Amino acid sequence: MTGDTPTRLQIPARTAAAKLIVVVRAPDAADYDRVLDVLVEAGIRSVELTLTTPGTLERLPELLARYGDEADIGVGTVVDGEQLDAAVGAGAHYLVTPVADPDLVAAATLAGVPIVPGGLTPTELFGAWRGGAAAVKIFPANVVGPSYLKDLRGPFPGIAAVPSGGVDLAGAAAWLAAGAAAVSVGGPLLGDALRGGDLAALRDRTAEFVAVCGQAS
Image (cartoon, rainbow, N blue to C red; front, top):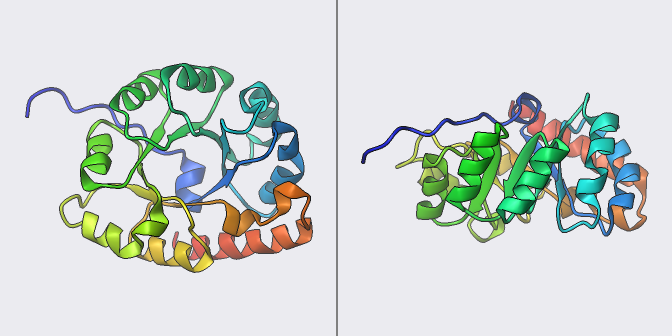
């Protein structure tokens, strides 16, 4: 194989240390604040806001000003170059995509923003990693389980992987024990909080996840 080895940016330091990314897929960007207030106060240091939530990019500079000193704010569900450029321009600390698109990896790296592309097969995951991804997202993680990462790390011992999709509290512990760089969680932590649910219960669930992931640090 010929060619230069791509530059690899690292996932942000707070995300790497916390080993926990919370995916906040809200009905509307106006719904972010009440949930992010609790998450950040309870110790979350990395949040992925998704482009499937209307208004995310428009609100991102404001949210970065409010929470960015305490937590990494990433933008997820990036699926094309236009979205990537817009997220970079709005100040995203990192990018996440559900696909292993080498063009997105190259564009993010050129822009100086770490990117975590998603895939499921060894070919997809290693291709994205070889292309310079900061880490690769095993998605959907619930169809393979933590033993899959142990298998991947046989031929690819240096790969940094972040499982995403159906990762609950026990799953977070198991994936981290299997060698995950971090875990990406959504519904099992957020519950009904984005639909007006109990914020005290959200705080309790968050504390549990922070404690479990902190033990793996």
